[in-house]
Image (cartoon, rainbow, N blue to C red; front, side, top):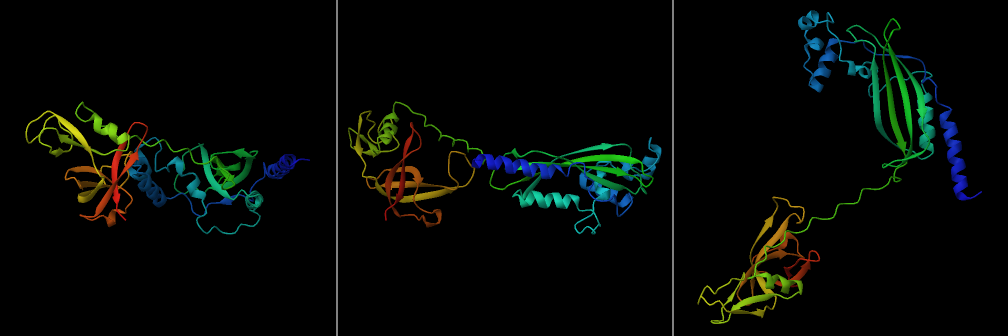
Amino acid sequence: MTDAGDQTADKAALLARLRAFEGRQVGPPLPARDPVNQAMIRHWCDAMGDALPVYTDPVAAEASIHGGIVAPPAMLQAWAMQGYAPPVIEGRSGQDELLALVEGAGFTSVVATDCDQEYARYLRPGDLLVETKTIDAISEEKQTALGVGHFITTTSTYADQSGEVVGVMRFRILKFKPGTGRGEPAAPPRARRPRPALTGDDAWWFEACREHRLLIQRCASCGVLRHPPEPACGGCGSFESDTVAASGRGSVYSFVLNHHPQVASFDDPLPTGLIELEEGTRLVADLVGIEPAEIVVGMPVQVTFVDHDDELTLPAFQPVR
């Protein structure tokens, strides 16, 4: 028999042992430790934000169709819960045996999946419930996002002090093997950096950045360097210009650490520097290759180019080591 065949046989054998528990009552009926009472109803309503007067106001309850205080139906399970240190009940071990078998096969993690309740009548103060629990169903091995596992469904039937059934609850859990899930969903691609608003006056500068070249605009008449690019010289007014290649060396003239607002396409915090180039012009750019706490005004930096995507390349500056 192949390994795959062995695994199939092992799964079938385990499932047969698990399903032998189906229909088995989990020990003797278990009486609630306390009767339905006004104090616990009030605590429940406070916790749930339920202000319905019929639960807590004797006068309003007396005037209602119920003729007196009733408990919220969703409290059904709460009346028979055994607390953090439940008493040892002789013979009430069927579910423990089942869980020990499941966990021994490696299904050690657990998560509650769903719960259905049916109510036969409202409960009133003084009712004392008795819970009878049955192992209802055990699924074959299932692949889930959390892991490979078995769904176990139990049914609890609640009767009052006279034996009348007042409600039924079906509760389902998944016992699964940790580390066997489908894995985390793939992270969505990072948002693109905002596109610069290109004009005829500055498109050439961004095109040079895509080629990993840092250029500075120069007035063709008076030779003054300027950045950002402008259509005319602020000194002599000339509309004629050319460019010079910057050395890429400079220093941090000033900087900020941007924390808010957080934008998906940027890191947080985002160190942004006002860089004074050797040539004398200044430009704003990211500071990279350094911890934010280490950035100081005046530190020497060198340009590097960051290809954010196929369309956008921008200069950034890193410390000169």
